Image (cartoon, rainbow, N blue to C red; front, side, top):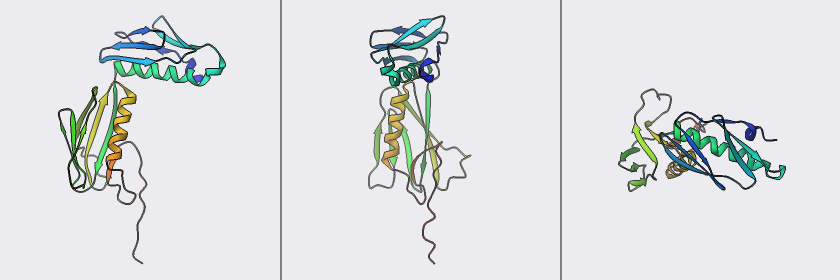
Length: 186
């Protein structure tokens, strides 16, 4: 039996869950999310909790997946999700202009990255990041859909991957990057 799939999901006040045949609709103070439900998994809502049950052991992998997707939807419409990205490198810049981010990343042209609907960005310099050499600023991405937020963060990381020697590029703020020492000249 899936340990993740067996855990009940507590539904906070102000959140309504509509159980459909192939999807779950979760409405909360921050918005509405639709989550797919794999066939063979059904959700039961009672006493402010939501539990996932599976029809047979053949779909054990989908049991935990369905529960995790439903939990992410509940957390997303109540609290939301946040990912922070650091821009590191001399001359590297990022500026949020409406629903797009304009980057200067050492290329011959500025890069305009359009933000999808439901994702908001804020660029600010955090003074406590003195341990990062050539730190410029931090981009905070927020949204209610965890999958979409992770995809946007991965696409930003791909614009200029951190190099192995100085760590210059767009980096995840909570990830440790081990840098290579480089040549010593001896």
